[in-house]
Amino acid sequence: MNPAMHLRDKRRFPVHILVFLAPAVIIYTMFMTYPLVDSLRLSLYTSDQRGNESFVGLDNYHKLMTDPLWEPRLKGAILNNIEFFAIHMFVQNPIGLLLAALLSSPFIRGRAIYRTLIFTPTVLSVVLIGFIWSIILSPLWGISGDVLTAIGLEEYAKKPWLGLESTALPTLSLISVWQWVGIPMMLFLAALIAIPDELVEAARVDGATAWGVFWRIKFPLILPTVGIVGVLTFVGNFNAFDLIYTTQKVNAGPNFSTDILGTFFYRTFFGQQLQPGNPTMGATIAGVMFLIILAGVLLYMFGWQRRVAQVEL
Amino acid sequence: MSSLSSLSHRLRPAHSLQLLGAHAILLAYTALALFPIVLVLINSFKTRRAIFKTPYALPNSETWSTIGYETVFKRANFPDYFLNSLIVTVSALILILIAGTMAAWALAEYRFPGNNIMGLYLALGIMIPIRLGTVSILRLVVDIGLVDTLWALILVYTASGLPLAIFVLTNFMKQVPRDLKDAARVDGASEYRIYRMILPLVRPAIGTVMVFNMIPIWNDLWFPLILAPSERNKTVTLGAQTFLGQFISDWNAVLSSLTLSAVPVVILYIIFSRQLIRGLTAGAVK
Image (tube, rainbow over all chains, first blue to last red; front, side):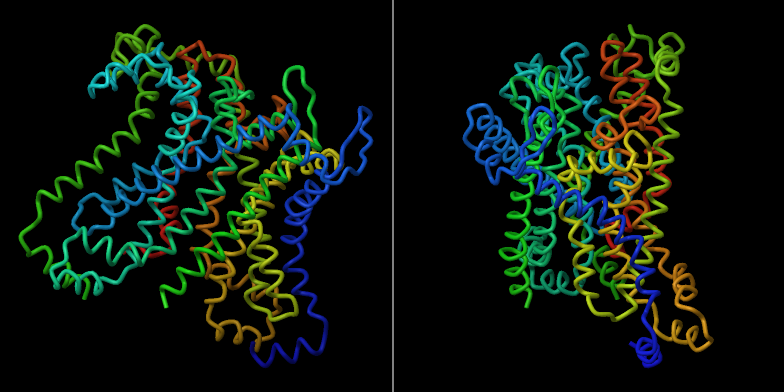
């Protein structure tokens, strides 16, 4: 703060600060914080046929967790979300790390080209990716069958991967991994190339192998990024509606086997075919999602970030 | 110094086997990333027979056909969808940049009571998906008479883009040298003038914010589906989604509409890829 400003601040009310903040605060509050808070409020209400709302406390949450009509759907969606998340965490992020490790090596020629090309699926819309993969996997066109036969997996060639209860969700998760691997790759790459050369050189001089250098020196140094990638993967999980809606339609078929909280939320809130939408129950599902995200983010902030910060010291 | 040490590396006997392995992995992954996209692209210019008979071949004079594109242009308003997407994306970006730079400037420059709390409040939205408030957003939009308008989308995307934009811009604006601002103040420039003066200095951050917001807004399905689903207001993503749903058995039309919807984003990506990658790697690219 410079002295001139201090004087001016004391002389008159700083209207300019309000002017600078107003547009962002008004739009953000009106279209983001207010709806989030209001949606949490709605989850404590119920509405009758005529749209009159009455306060019911935590009844909606209770219903969601115990009612035989709601409970199986909630449980199914949460379990599917966990599987979807786990596949991203343990397939997407290690692949991203491997690609970043290779791309961070100064000896690889054409790094920029690889990087740009591998990132391409990430910029396309999930809707396009969903349709592209559903036609690639369609037994009618037979592309996936050809590829699987070519690599010697003939017995799987004719499988309708998106049509079977047992394979639909893992297949969709892998499609999503295929699309989004560019994000962890870029974040890991940024962290890896920020490591000072001297550290790596010193270890090399001491005779460490590339493998040893990576796991003993580089990986511990990029742990903060590992945490950020983890939390982004976790939160992104709850936005994964578009892919399932596009490929499996609103009922997240076959037989709800690909239903996640996002599709469950949409179906409940908006309704489907014969069943009218239920905004207050929709808000309740959003409330459950909010609590899960909050728990995950807090766990990251107090469990991971703090510990990693200590290690760094 | 780093060029010297990498030189010493290069003079060392190369681990050619390791290098070969690395290229093999990268090439294989690049092929995996591009194969489905290229396949859709080349088959969109073929006859239906050729799509099934020779899916891996490039179109030739015998198999060339644009029947799919003709169907798309006859049966769907893709030019209108593009225009809607363009209006929504550009307007939201402009609003994010105006409101975002103003708020970031206030947080970075002035010490006032509640500065930290305001910064924290505006940053909360980075972690919480705006979709969780959809029930109330729809009610709000109905109440203020914006339901099924592009304005509803523009305002929602602005609100959801602001938190990260303000966070990035504030950090950047804190690095603008003090002398410059003080000199302007001594000359009697108003605070608004100084704000306009420093905008060109934070251009890299503005670029980062732009490319970060552009792609998710263009690609979103959720809010167009819920807030502006009528034919008149469809964005490309929603338009492609409904068209593809109806024409799923017309392979020519499916492949052509997929290609048509992907092309603008890929062109934007090619133009902005350096900026996008620089933004993602936060200036650490050597």
